[in-house]
Length: 78
Image 1 (spheres, rainbow, N blue to C red):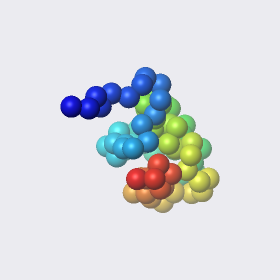
Image 2 (image 1 turned 120 degrees about the vertical axis):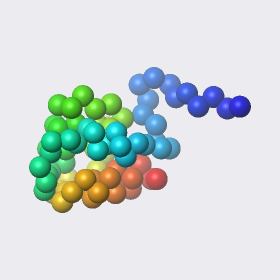
Image 3 (image 1 turned 90 degrees about the vertical axis):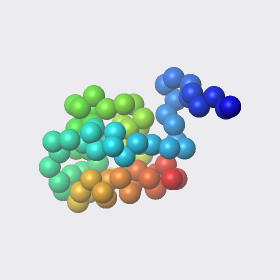
Image 4 (image 1 turned 30 degrees about the vertical axis):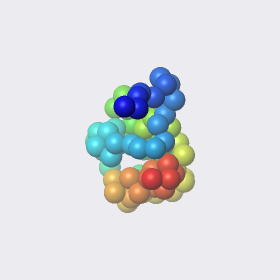
């Protein structure tokens, strides 16, 4: 069986957890800028992989969490 562990400190780009993204953005009012998404995720103590993914999405106003999730998925190529 293959070992599914990933080196610590290296974000996984082959999969991500939409529920973790939703939790990271709890309390955020939309529309929101990328900066607001990142700030909220950090305030909510999101995993580094989530913050890194948000740093990689385009700077724009996001209408809702679904639009953010789509942008993250595009950024990660999933």
